[in-house]
Each structure stands twice: as C-alpha cells, then as structure tokens.
Image (cartoon, rainbow, N blue to C red):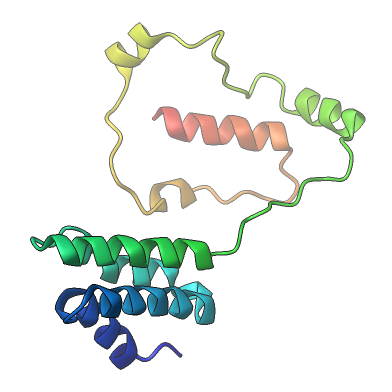
Length: 151
C-alpha cells in the first residue's frame, strides 16, 4: 500500500529541496511510486497538480519532471481487438438494430437548438427506471433507450 508519508515527503521535496538535483531525485522517485502502485495514478496526479501551478518556478519545473517520470512509468495501453472481423455477425447486428441507430445524415442542428435539453451532470439513475429483460431484442432495447434519452 502506498504510504502517505513517503508520498508526502517526496512532494514536499519538490517544493522545499535545497537543490535542483534533490528536486529531480524526488521527481524520479514519484515515477517509481507509479511503477510500484499503478492503480494509484489518479490519486498521484491529483496530489501533484498543485505543484504544477506553484508560484515558484523551481517547484513548477520539478513538478513537470515528476509528471514526466510518472508518465514514463505508466505502461502503454494496447487494447485487444478481435483477431479478425466477422462481417456476417456485423451485418446481422446492424439488421437487428435497424431504425435504432442515430446518424449524421439525419442530424439537424436547428432541431437540436430548438428542441434540445441542456446536458446536466448525472449519476445515470434516471436511465435505470426500466429494467431490460433478457428476452428483449437488441433493437427494442436500443429504441427504448432512445425514447428515454429523448424525454
């Protein structure tokens, strides 16, 4: 588990270390923390953020070095794709959902401006009113979801 004392000390060194070398060493150690605790990336970046906007140039420079060290420690993400496309399955899925797809060809900005509702933050609770049944066809599910969105 990432101990707050080590992280706090390293962040403090970004700001208060007596030399640029010490600040850079702290920055590199923050990259090591990322390697040791890859799931803590959002927390680590959140903690680092204020140092990127510090009044002191040396602190901002050290925070940028830390950001570089952290980003270098994040493994490259390579999503898995199907080995080969299944054109038959794709065609069947599109046929099943015919009429439920939105398209740019039918998009009308004047209609959106005249009839659209503002987008607000949501946890998604309003979409959980109607529970989908396993017997529901994908096309029916898409049409039901579209009706909910258009309300």
